[in-house]
Image (cartoon, rainbow, N blue to C red; front, side, top):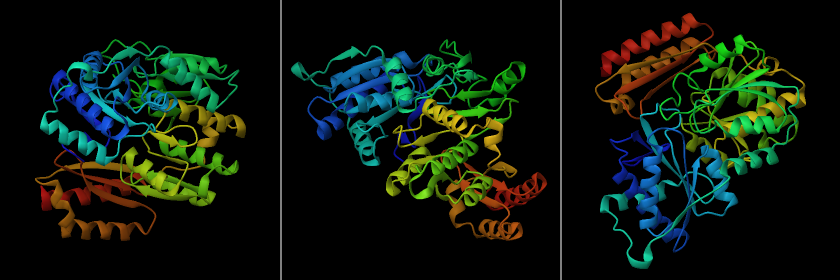
Length: 444
């Protein structure tokens, strides 16, 4: 990763890293880089989520992009996957979303997409960073670009999802938690257009309440709402709409691992799971892999991060992949994680199988899992720390294949993360405590 670009674009606190001046520079440099690769006056689509700082950064990016000679269509509030879809539909050269996804409102971010609706390559991000370091000069005279509003972006996105995944949801009662984010208009519209009886919560963004005690990072909220009502299932999106998690009629969580398992089985039964393979990350529960083995489906594992999942899907031409967080990609219907498309695909699988969500989720059993963070002096020292890896090997041998141990450094903090899965919660706790003590003694 570069100085600014991480696994999900540029992210930080609005007004600290993400100032108007910085955003303007990013826009200008992105325009110049894309002009050199795609054409003299590249066309950018620009969208944002609902957080308070979004309009400030949107305006700064418009100024930067046009001062770099780009043409800009400004879509306003739109889910990230909607921006990715429209970039392809409108044959734009690139797209930018102002969003910090599932983070609190004080954070924000800049995600840049290519003309194919996928995140920029490392090489393109590196080139933007190089130009940022050089303080890219503004265009002058006739070199400026122009900007104009893009009307009807939400409707176009919804129509695109419905066209790709046509469903008759008549008679289905769905509770939707939109995290007071970018999906607050698109999701209720899409489900209603498909005939569902929709109740929407956390659908009134005020700039401050995005992801605040709601959405896919706070599933207890929709679970309580489910138990207080009468619904077939519930769906909770994150702030920018690229993730979704579900709850069944009783309010029990059906996370990304379960959803990918349901979708993989459904695609295989339809003969649409290319190479009978699915792509997940190292954080995917071992119970998922055991379920896929029973279904005759291969599992390819990547590092944490949707860009790594997508890279492996492209490398092997696989159709389905995703993460436990609900960031799920089906390449036949979307170019990036799309919470709305994933929800429609899940509902399609339920409709065609005749199952309720609780029945379908019985495809796998989640092994108990525990996560522990241990503060260390130097997280990079983990790689060469013999005592830790000897202890990990001993714990894995003790589990005899019935569980697993994952120890890795944090990508951003002075922490070592320990994840243990085992047949019982007590075993998870015991292994974690032993390993945490060794990590603290060796690296703390």
